[in-house]
Length: 319
Ligand SMILES: Nc1ncnc2c1ncn2[C@@H]1O[C@H](COP(=O)(O)OP(=O)(O)OP(=O)(O)O)[C@@H](O)[C@H]1O
Ligand SMILES: [Mg+2]
Image 1: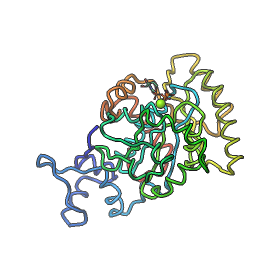
Image 2: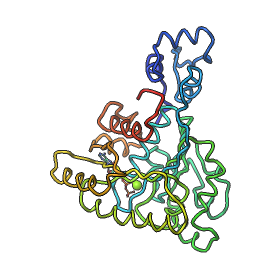
Image 3: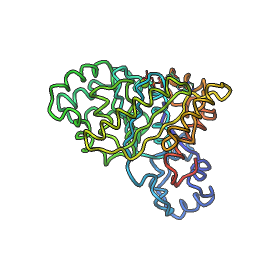
Image 4: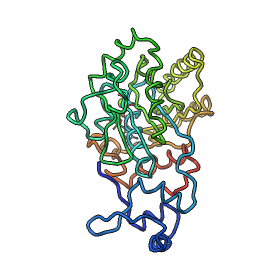
């Protein structure tokens, strides 16, 4: 993963203005001095909020969001989609914090971050009361931060059992830093336990990737029942639930049928965007790279962008 940069043409088109206007406003001293790379003028994602402000456009994000990618069924794309989506949001200028809630550390590996880059996980925060700021690590992208995970996180379930307010510890710790980020994105493991319960209660939006098969469809029922119980027991309401199809192959009959079943029973939550099967997505994840850098113009990147436009319909930039 590398720090993304934009050429003047790309940057102007992202902001919805002409390159000549961008350069003229710069010449007039309206903008800060652009960065230089190998003598060329470049722009960084973290410049976007300032430029939007100067040209009088809306902020990228008005209400800060905390989202958890969750499905009790394994292998539906929680990790890959959350990683690629989180990276892309940072690439378009948002302040993003990704949290790996899975002791398998797959989200961490999606960014090629290995054990030598960190020595603490949420275990230290939730159980040993370490300051959450101490487990947030930098990535090569300035406005993308990560709370990584590895197997050291696995005893957290057992350790939480004997603690006070065990379900709400993550929410409490996040409250201290949530103002620093436009979006906080968590990648959950395919299980229901105290760590995932902490994740759900610390978020206001649930993102549910499903595969177009009937096993996934039945798994949703269990997920919705669990969420309903949590909402009742904790007097808590999620602001949004987004169900989306991932790994979709339109040529399969079963895909069409399970999509129709989802539309019939979950129309209030089902997203219009479908993330299609794309081998580049699997390749990118296994290479530890975001799809937008591994294969910038492929089905996967178009679908992730459509996904973002649906979740942030008022985005003041053109993607
Ligand atoms: N749209 C897609 N097209 C092709 N391959 C995909 C797509 N989405 C996910 N994959 C691949 O499917 C596999 C499972 O994805 P992923 O690990 O993201 O799922 P998960 O829900 O996080 O799994 P787990 O429940 O084990 O945490 C991975 O090999 C991933 O690269
Ligand atoms: Mg996963």
